[in-house]
Length: 147
Figure 1 (tube, helix red, strand yellow):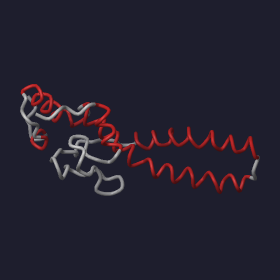
Figure 2 (figure 1 turned 180 degrees about the horizontal axis):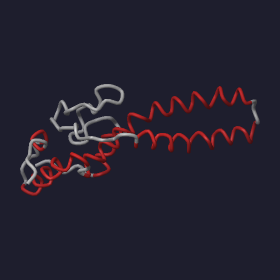
Figure 3 (figure 1 turned 90 degrees about the horizontal axis):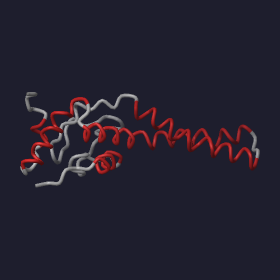
Figure 4 (figure 1 turned 90 degrees about the vertical axis):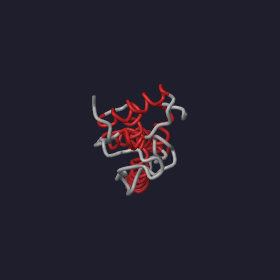
């Protein structure tokens, strides 16, 4: 019997762009394109609906990191505006691009673990199999009929 995946572990696996179920398969086929199924365990990811939440979270995170840095540099050194733009525009852009995929992975892990959207059948199947002591078969959960 495999141990159920904890909330934190599902988020971390998603953040590291791995399958929240097994932790081995790749979650993304392209930059922001989530794969249909895990190549290792077969978990179905077609129900995921991350939509715009990862972008909003990245904006909030990067904004809370860049703005204090910009203000601290301005207060301490008062550099010219062109130098501030030369420093902070690339820092903001690269930070946002760097964080977007891991944050989207964490959101997919959140949806998978909590059974949001189309993941509720997979979650019921995992819960039932954990209670019965049967090893999980995640790729069959998406084919389960809703009772």
